[in-house]
Image (tube, rainbow, N blue to C red; front, side, top):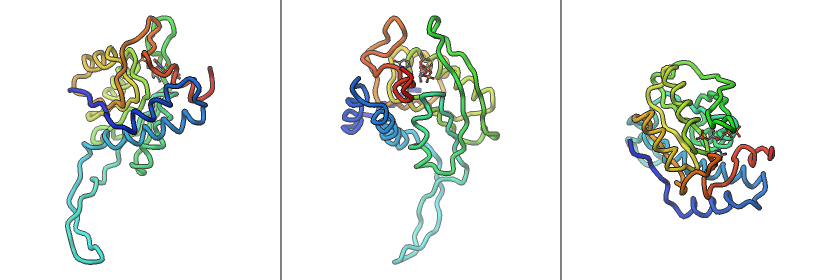
Length: 208
Ligand code: PRP
Ligand code: URA
């Protein structure tokens, strides 16, 4: 499946501040949340709706509402937590699972350390939230775990991606929908996205 890149003046504007090393932790979290809102609008485009009869103050009409089947948000800890508030704002009844993964600094292989998924993943749309798609190892592992828990329809929402990460995840999971705010140039020798924004989790939580 091809990936979707948001191409929008607000995305470019906010990304320019997010990338800036002078941006403070609190500004960084706010920008991730704002970009999350823009990502959520596109990521949720595929949610099924149904026709309902309503009455406006003027007349009866047909309108469309989301099917009453709550979506599932799965942030990849830690940095994925930054995208949860915006998705929950638009999908207030969504269930939230958590997946803890960290990249081993030497091998860049994701190491799982926590997992708590809501039940009945089969019928629900699952949104994997992770601001960074670098080598693609973490996203690929998250999708693998969700599929093994029964998830069938999954969208990955990321702020920044490297071409290498998109290719890896598409190879591993050809059925995955991918929505990203921007695609950067490449990875450096330590698996960081260039030009990138540095370590998203560290900047978000002040652990640099
Ligand atoms: C970062 C990021 C992704 C992962 C992307 O997490 O949030 O989960 O790296 O890299 P990959 O595509 O090469 O797997 P990290 O492992 O640094 O953990 P953190 O969020 O706790 O800082
Ligand atoms: N994880 C990050 O937080 N930043 C990168 O550039 C790559 C992986």
